[in-house]
Structure formats: structure tokens, C-alpha cells
Length: 311
View 1 (cartoon, rainbow, N blue to C red):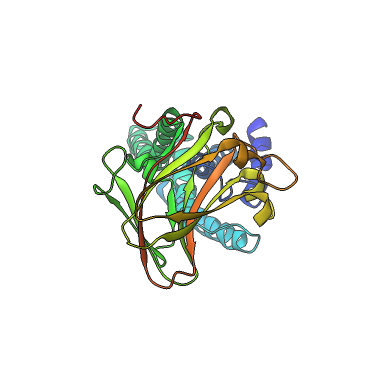
View 2 (cartoon, helix red, strand yellow):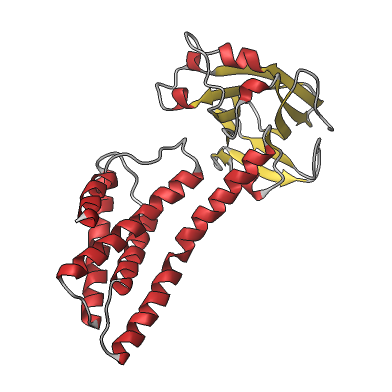
């Protein structure tokens, strides 16, 4: 009965709740694994009432899972959720997990088939489990690196980078580096907005004096950019311009070491204080360039009121 109640409570979660665009990849991957758990539990409960011992039962249940999963994804599209093929695959993986581990074979031949099905079902869910482990390791790596926000050295750091490839060409380069072995080279398209977003909420900023970054402008002319920082209240709210930190940047030719007092960042939203342990989005962009521009970014960090660079 407890399993049945859990299933009934979980059904609405296919249509409401769940991670949003500012949630961590770990939460997103763990939430997606919920499809596996739900369908595994469903098949275990179903087999209490309706045994499914034969191959044609297994094929029929797999087909129903695919059709039902597809129908749910279609409905989600109309209730503001994103349809995903990976959800359908996870549904089937969960069906096989519950189907074969819920079996009670009585003959040697049936035991061999069920044993093979159990091995296959575990292998089937392994990719989804690996995504959770990989995201958890990346999250731990980024939190251990804090107050380093991003230096573009590790795969975990690079996975926090988001941009529109139609407007930005982003490459990790070994040239124009201020710290470590790599910098981020950006080629920004003219007209409109061109820039990047970094996920940055891996610690509490309030204990630090400055937010700092290094930028190299290879042009002979100054380059105008905008820095924006926002917390989860802003990102899950109205996205008001006055509810975040916005700062115009003028990059002179060559290296620019930029610093901004954390206290100024904290007090910039109008009518409130920024949530300093939930600053999750860092944006750097250009607006209305008349021609393509190149800039190198490196060593994005928090530091004390004195420079921590090189320590």
C-alpha cells in the first residue's frame, strides 16, 4: 500500500515542479532519474496483481511504456514543460528494471531469462546513473575551487559556459593566459547582443572583498562590454534590469585586470540586497558591435580587498 501511495503522489510531478533553467546539472540529472524510479516501482506493484512471466508480456509492457512515455511528453509540451527523448528512454529503463527484478521465476529456463534481463536492465540504467555521478563530481570540484569562479581549465568549469553559437565563437586557447594553461577566446558577432553566461553559484560571496576577472583585448581600439550578475531571486522573478548588478566595461588594448567591490554588487538591486550565497548567473556581452570583436577571458574569481592573484 505504501508503494501505491508513493506512485499516486509522484504522478503530478510529471507535469508540475522540477528543476528550472537556473537549477544545477546535478539536480536536473537526479530529477530525470526519477523517471527510472517511478516506472521501476510501477512494474513491481503491477506484478503483485498481474504476473508478467512470459516474453510476449515483456514486449507488450515495453511497447506500452514507449507509447505512454511519448504521450506524457506531448502533454508536457502544452503545460510549459520541455519534451525530452531521454525521458522516454529513462521510462523504458525503469520498466525493465521493475519488470525483471520484480519477477519470481519457477523454472531453470525462466531463471536464466530473468537473470539476463536483470543484467540488461542494470546496464540500461547505467548511463543515467553515470550522469548523476559525473554532475555530482563536477559540483564538488567547483565548490572546492571556490572562490575561483572559472578559469576554464577543467571540464567541470567548461560545462558552466553557455552561449549562442550563432552569435559567439568560443574556444579554449593556450594564448593570452593570465592564470593556468588556458583562457577563453570569444569572437563576438556584430549587431544585437553577443556574449556568454556562466553558472556561478558555488559558494557565499559575502565573505570576500572583490569580484575580479582578467580580460585581454587584442585590438588596438577599446572594446565596450557589459558585465551582469544576478541571483536566484532575479532569475526566477521578473528579470528586471534594476534587480541585478549591471556594469559597463571598457577594455583597453592589452590586459585589463578588473575588480568590483562585493559590497557594491550586494547593494545594486533596487529595494533589496542581493542573495550573496545564490549568485548563479554571470554574463559578459557586447551590444550593437559594428564589426566582429575578439576578447580573451581568464581567472574569474573572488578575492580579499588585497589582490590574491598568484597566491
